[in-house]
Image 1 (tube, rainbow, N blue to C red):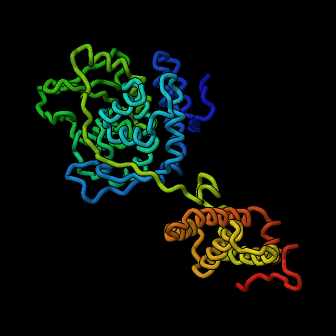
Image 2: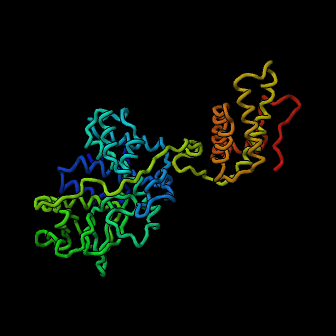
Image 3: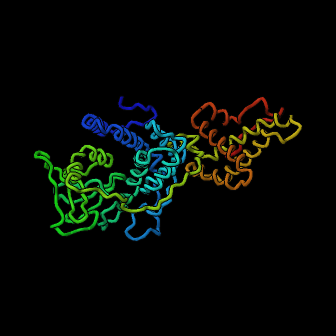
Amino acid sequence: MLWPHARLRRARNVELQQRVAEARRDSPESEAWLGLLEAALGESGDVATWDAAVPRPAADRPVKAPLLARTRIVLDGRAARSWVRRLLKRSDRMNPRTIDAVALLEAAVCQDDARSETLAVAAGADPHALRVVGQMAALPLLQACGRGLGREVPGSWWEGYCPLCGAWPVVAEYAGLERKRQLRCGRCGTGWAVPALRCVFCDETDHESLGYLTPEEGEQMRRVEVCGTCKGYLKAVTTVRPLAPWAILLDDLMTVHLDVAALERGYHRPVRPAYALEARIAERQHSLLRSAFGRSGVAPWGTRPSDVCRELLAALEASEGRRQRRKRDTTPDAIGLGIKRDLLERAVAADPEPGAFEAWLLDQCRGAGGAEGGVRAMALSIFEEWRLAQEAEPFREWLARGAPSDDAPSGKSPSNSSR
């Protein structure tokens, strides 16, 4: 069965699915790794979650530092933990509950193998297996960074490591008619041009130390670039157009015979990561808007929050009769409604834009001090009612009529405030 874990997303890209099926057929021994990659590429399709986490490059990053160096990546912690745990469940030897998902993501993004090993030892997991899972778990975030920051890669970047995430390249492409050499990162998909006669690992430029390994006849589009100085190697491909970001690691898997040929001749890939990013991952405070409207975080209609808040104030007025019958105004219900009334009145006065309503409400929560818990609960209630007013016509009509209720005081008809 192609997808034994129902909660993992399946990639929607038809070409991707075909390539995965081809890889599964031709390399059955790589099923475990391919399953992780397939899941990661499927998760990458959730662009709303991961694109929202793309950071701005740090202004104080050193010269020749990748764009993600020293960045602070703020992501939806709940979504990130859910994704990492789903991936960890693919291994019977790992307990997702014993592994800090966000810490694993940070270690993987930074290529911090020592930290990954520490997490593995603490969880009683195999260090190599956890490191592989971590790299696949970071793929959706890194691919999102490639989409969001790719245009900021300097055209003058000639370093051997990725200008965005600091990884060594997976392949050298010679695309189009000009056949200019472009290195490609398997993690974020970034491509960058470097001179043809130059080792990406040690910067050797002596043509007598640089060479190629050519595969069997009939495979003229592929070869292996080798360096006699550092004994490093890099696979190369001649192609009509650049590989899609999702295709780079799949292509790497499908050409493992080239790796074998290089290893048998004494060449190797670098053991150490190319660049220590020192990036940090923090969790975004759980979004009230996401709770109300789902993953997209966008209301389906553009109704101004102040309009709905006016009508919700009328609904509170309609329930005044029930509260007046109580002897004391210290019940949790009365206190909560008082907080809600205050929030609604402030929302009407501030008249925030629909797209800024979440930030406005969160500001009210943060400014509540010790009462933040109660304010947050009422803020979420307001969001839910705002959504309901936009999605359920009967509810909106009821609000527009002044929220008629049997609890309204006798002789007093609740009215909607003027707009």
